[in-house]
Image (cartoon, rainbow, N blue to C red; front, top):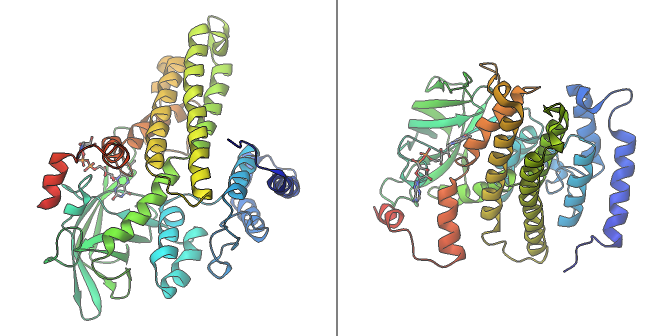
Length: 402
Ligand SMILES: Cc1cc2nc3c(=O)[nH]c(=O)nc-3n(C[C@H](O)[C@H](O)[C@H](O)COP(=O)(O)OP(=O)(O)OC[C@H]3O[C@@H](n4cnc5c(N)ncnc54)[C@H](O)[C@@H]3O)c2cc1C
């Protein structure tokens, strides 16, 4: 097994470091205090240097580099070490843009990709419906083509990012006569229009990250369809692949573990730093084992992709491991903080919190990780059936036939 990157790629790493030395953090500023303008400028410089949005052509706002999985990994490692801004997160840049690049028409790429990756357009995902979550292909929202426009009627649920979303990418039943997977199309639509009503869902934290979206004759132009009529299921599959990669990132687990370690150094148990407590050390070592396992498993995935081989069920394993690590880290943070960890201010938007309450948000988020982008049970089913060749889940098979 070759665990190094080789001379050529180590030289590339040096170039990335030189770039970062010159560009990040901005002069006289600590990384965490950088302004949105400074971050925007840095991202632009990193794109020009070929370090961000490498697989996106320049005409759509990317840096158009030759595919090089090892170079991409080195960039991730070096940027993470300095907490330098990387590509924008969210459903637009991480899910829609790659999907349009794979399946969109030329005008869709030109019109939507750059603005999605620069954060100018915010997108939300309209997949789940009441009664169509894990069994997504049962969705009932309909789209009918009338006078050059799709007219959409139905309901979506658990829509994240609704607060700022300008657009939605949605799965809609346009071919009612076809079987359930073949009857779905993938449509893009504007959120601000009379046929759409958004009702926020209040969470136990007081926050309202998700919404129900009611579509009552919402309209979108005929050519705002990605792929052909009835191809929405396969278009959505390529999208979910991107989402799983986003969620299953080993870097994210490693970053979270570092934060936990900082917490264990700061918090005291019996007058000494918690990190010196035997029980805490054991728990940290246990989690660290899984973080390292996930890192190695990501390298195996990377190697397979590098060799042009199918990664198989590894991304599913990585998503499950990532979910478990997130939950273990949350549990230990609660143990370290005690009652204080329950004091998250109500209405605090997740991800924007600082101080100890961020651990409560992390805990809440870690529960959602087991559900978002395909539940852990469903990932296990796929591993069992496709990875291990076990017989198909009989309940799921029955639903698919209906
Ligand atoms: C943080 C978060 C963000 C989300 N954001 C969005 C979004 O932006 N847009 C969107 O469209 N949706 C979003 N969702 C919804 C998400 O995709 C669904 O919740 C998910 O697909 C599960 O569907 P469901 O909630 O209907 O649960 P169900 O499908 O009803 O499942 C309920 C339980 O039954 C289990 N189960 C179901 N079928 C099987 C089976 N065949 N075998 C074994 N177990 C099974 C599941 O694992 C689960 O534990 C989000 C969810 C979360 C948690």
